[in-house]
Length: 530
Image 1 (spheres, rainbow, N blue to C red):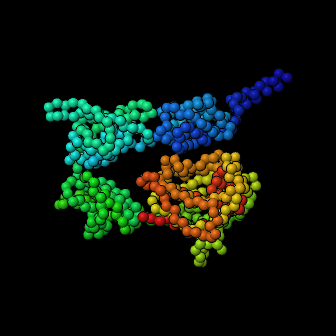
Image 2: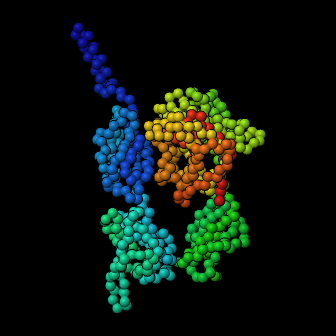
Image 3: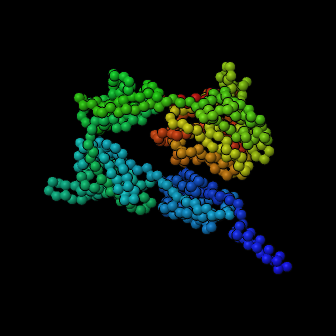
């Protein structure tokens, strides 16, 4: 008996040493899926770095943000609940727990559109919001004793610049004066001057310093597109002209219809060639500026924009050839999520096409009910990632670094009445479904992962990474193909890194809302360049 007890104790000791009294718990990451506060205009969640970055409206108070809602991943909960009011003037941390602890950072960014516009300005004003200092740069030919201010905005939308204080001289003494602000106005900026700004009943005092910059005749900036380019120059002298030529040519062409204002000259060159090197200069009398080299963008089309290339793998149709790799993998759909239930909802169409000919096809998108959930026919640039709960995870975006003016093509839509809706769209039942095509150009660092089950979607209105946006939608039966030319609205002059084109037979399909039997046909897409 004693021997048996000793053996049992020894085995227990071995087991204890091996497991160190710990259970093997599963590793389940804890994530913030969504967070909403008053005054929010955008949200970026990075699960890899465990960061949630909230973009705020100009008028939001980052020190007192009312928390509307926060959603965590399944099985995750905070060690301490977030307070009802968040102070995001500095990042805060929250620890989430499943079987392990995960520390997340929540922060806020707020972009206030500040500007100062004055005569003979050499470059955009610069701002230091922490010290409330602003610097405005004028030509060295502009006397600092008489700077003409045309407009100014120093605080969020709704703020008012009420007065300004500076130093004047009557050639016998120097004295301080305060006057009401009404633009345009001429002010002495020999010394720094202050501007009193009222915002939400609070006075904020900004200091503005004018700095003279040596004025050299030059091309100051170029924004080149595929067939055109916007040039801005500065000059010293009279009768300025912007001249340009191809880099491999010798003869210069004088640009027509240039605009001259103060010491600046600007023009839009038309009729340039895509993907071509050019040079430009400013001529002012006998003075010729250094040459400025620039290149126009290529007029790029994505692969298979005519939707002629397809292959079938089991029940799943793919909008690219079998074995395609690299830049031939442009389009995808959620067919993998629906094919095993109802077959592919996005399929090639050979008989009903907008442009006929050998090998010509279109794409057919149909909305249906996939056993447990409504599913819209869809097509997008990017790739299907996986089924996720009752929805799917889609990676939107393909590499793209040029700036088209619009997307044109053909579509045919036959809507059904809305038969299925989630709780927030019940009021739409019985109304006509809507089909749409959306285009966005972004400078995202990586693809955006749409997660329908978790309601993670692109914020088309407020995502700061969106450079250009365009949408075509209809709830009417088009009676066949119609042509469309979807103009892109540019929100920034930044160069994109990705293009996202999304089409759906039910615009609210991400919310499991739409009409069973709605059909959208698409054909012959093409980017149009300027």
